[in-house]
Length: 483
Image 1 (cartoon, rainbow, N blue to C red):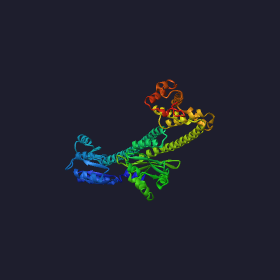
Image 2 (cartoon, one colour; image 1 turned 60 degrees about the horizontal axis):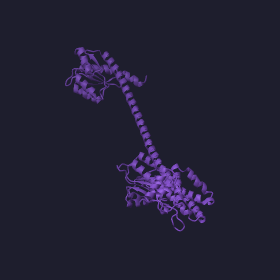
Image 3 (cartoon, one colour; image 1 turned 135 degrees about the horizontal axis):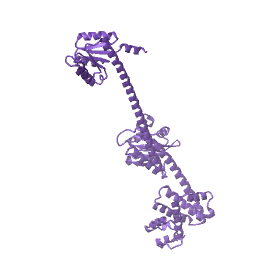
Image 4 (spheres, rainbow, N blue to C red; image 1 turned 90 degrees about the horizontal axis):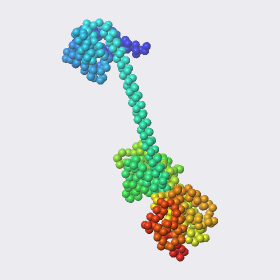
């Protein structure tokens, strides 16, 4: 048995409040309880009893029923209403009729009753029993509090986990939507527009811009798409691609709040105009260690600062968009290379067959018009135009076609979606028909000579009826007459 347990069993460390208006009984209990190691404090009336109870915070109270000022019953009721004293054991003593006094005391909140005159040994036994029970209750309450704390911590952890899952789900859904939108785009400006829409929607900002390399000055990032900014403010948002700010943003590779950059004096000259334009958050678009674009957001419309989830969302969307911008640059470069190859090929063909280039370009023009009429935009229309041009030149060029270009042309045709192939076929058929008939032939008669998908033919008929396919879309004789 530990020293503490032994001390508690002997009474050492416990405080007992004795409340009685009879000095002899108070003195008797002082002697009896003191002999067993209890510390004894006393009171002779009800009001003094309450004051001593609050001041001393006793471990047990021995309370007489008949007291001046306030009765023992009133004192018992008051103590039970006080949270810090509610669990203190109370033994009531009285010379009144035993049954009546016991019922009265127990109904007012007493734990036990002892009639007068009482045996000191019996009283000490009751005191020890109630103190032991009180210790057990304290232990149970303490364990209950510990369990409640553990439960609350578990609930808090579960809430944090749910918040984290919710945050991850929101970010992932935003990424998926943006990636799906960007998969249909091949121009950096279109990518920038979709990115700005996603950021402004999720982060609640009203002013934003995406700066991309300037076509005339690739070393400078200039605003390409802006929302909520005046032209004067947008003009301030130029960032040198090889400047200190760009290098720092690439090194960090994450969204950066404006105030984070204020501690870098070396950035002051670059940062001042951007801050003057209202920039509060910088989102670098980094791909393969270089800055391919920079998003600059204004303050949140609600006035709050960008917090953890905002930055996580911005960084995640920025990574998706950076890959899309780089990919669109590669697509644009590939298309430009393909266009140059087709142009070079057309020059070779035209040297052998005068007028072939003009005819090929007109076929491509018809295909592009049909693509727009049927809802193809962006890369679909442009790729179709290039493939149509190359395919026409391939048909006219015969063996003059370079071996390296031929697989690219026919491979593109074979890989094109079914509707695009139908558009190309109708465009080729239209060119063949108009070379054989009079230029004044009504559109309905031209359509009658064509074979192909009825939806594509209907689109062609609409274009002809609206006059959107003019003489410039039909081949010409060398002397300028319509074929």
